[in-house]
Image (cartoon, rainbow, N blue to C red):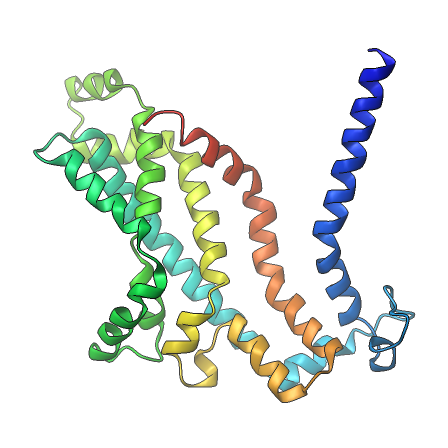
Length: 275
């Protein structure tokens, strides 16, 4: 390797390292503040590392707000929405990829056109529907509007389109029905797409703020994003406790992101190979 090539690679690594530090810095700084004693939070110049880690901040947060219940609510809602979207998107994606019926292309185009409708436009109709069903302040009210997604259908359809039609023909000759082929052959082959959709949906649902704020009234039904806001209201601007709450609420999503990162990248790239 020539000297110029080595220099270019070194500069590339340096640029990537700087970009990574810039991206990760807010998370590391939030963790640092969550471990600081109150006297060190508002000092100038600001401190970036606590002199002595104060783990009591996390215990104070747990005593101040029901953070365990907030985490449970978000976990239940995110898991239910994720499973629901995987189920509905896999069935609809399989139908659009393998079934032949009149108007399939027009129906798929109409289905995809819903992706251009902003979520804010459907907010009031969804709220009125949930209220008419008397599902406000409940898990079904938080879950039902998100059980189907056009994006998930499109993503899994792209994966199903990569399965050779000859494989389906051979399975049909051997006596394999449509559902058996879907369950035993198509779904295992589309596993990267399922994991991609699962990680993407879980993170999006976990970070929801407006819809849980709108449909929940009692504190015990709030999710983590709303819980952090209530912590700020009760504790004023005590940043060490606020950041402790932020870190507690961020940990599950961070674990899912680190676990599903390679599936997200691989799935989103592979899903666009065939249209």
